[in-house]
Length: 326
Image: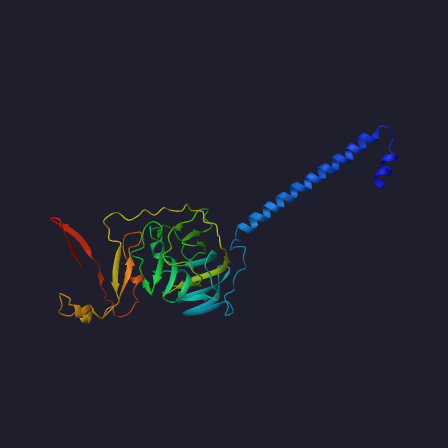
């Protein structure tokens, strides 16, 4: 009624012009609102799909509510303006489970030989994934290392080269920022806010599963950690292009049987084994990994008894006769 009253009292010739202006303004206003709504909808969709950066997550205080401290020495202090913990020969275990997402923290160390880093997807103290730094190898191709731990066996000698090691330069006794993105069987490590990952671990060796997190320094060297945060996500953003793992070359033996471990003394003065020597052993199947080897540590518990057997049956042909050796 008010709009009709305004139009009715408008001067001659103003009905079409004024009405058009009113209609045009209303249409323009409606389109603006619609466009703004669409943009907000797109932002919301992307916000839902994009995991929150761990930097935007809350910093986890180093206290007994959030951490289980297990080390020879863990001291809270202020170092170069940052509240931190100083760890010697031990680790700080977060009281939460983690499978996929983003983890960030600051780290500082000297040039002493040590291997500080992040333990993740921890099942127990002998089974976990490990990403760590080698301060004493600063500038070397293996300054950063990814290594799976099975039954307490550290097999870094097997897991080397692309996908397992990376070069990095460290600023000694200065704060450096570490960002780690973990997604399924892949992980990326960024150093000092680099735009691209320094290390792309394209094939994590343990089966993905929720587990613990820990900041680790099992050495006598002094290592400091600060500003720890993490954000869990089912689909964290991995920048690296997935690597196609080629099949093993023909002729490589892919399947073996592995015995349980036994005492070396059982082989004293023996060069040949009888059935009695092996009848008490238990055997299980083992397959070669994508690099062509078998990590025996994946299949045996680390004990003082360090001997085991691998066996296989190989068929070959001589003068049209099929032979089998074992």
